[in-house]
Amino acid sequence: QSALTQPASVSGSPGQSITISCTGTSSDVGGYNYVSWYQQYPGKAPKLMIYDVSNRPSGVSNRFSGSKSGITASLTISGLRAEDEADYYCSSYASGSTRVFGGGTKLTVL
Amino acid sequence: QVQLVESGGGVVQPGRSLRLSCAASGFTFSRFGMHWVRQAPGKGLEWVAVISYDGSDKYYADSVRGRFTISRDNSKNTLYLQMNSLRVEETAVYYCAKDGAGQVALDYWGQGTLVTVSS
Image (cartoon, rainbow over all chains, first blue to last red; front, side):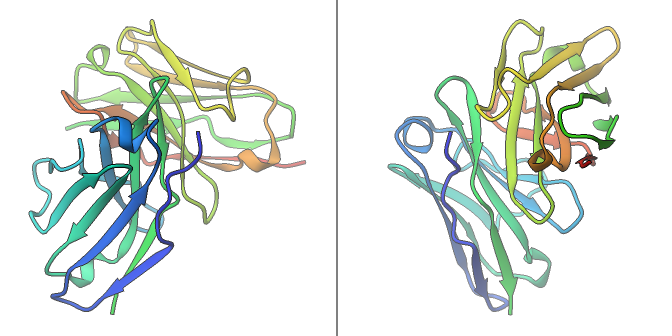
């Protein structure tokens, strides 16, 4: 149950696109199409942004998209806005019916 | 609307026990799996445990297996986490979260309850 690997930080200017990667193993990300992404503001609870690799819950902007290739999943945010500045976490279903999170990525909007 | 309200956090000495509760409302609690996730101060999210909709299946992170027990009372719409032999490094905000419908993700989260393990 090792944590998924995410970059500690990414940044971008308003209007640009950024991508956050999430690398696991064949026992989690690579083995199942069950990657989810969460947005968290300081002092707040996480919010689901993407589920099952590439699906958006109702109410989440279509500027957020997800994908997966092999053992690496990605979250892309297009048309970056100041309000997107937050921490982002990936998560995956893992063998043994467990879950695993990534270490988190701090997104800075310049 | 879905509401998850955690309680039971506080200051506890290393080696002691604590039980957290999560009161659920706004959805049919007995139809969904439930999770506990924790976050140490300034750190990332760590998945702790999951329980199936009827309580028949329970799974734990390696770090807590054998010391923590997840349970639920569907008649009270409440989720629990019994934490024994607590360690200093388990100081964290503990969140309860609900499984999504037809999706493998945590679609609603509570506001969290802080557990501080300190002598």
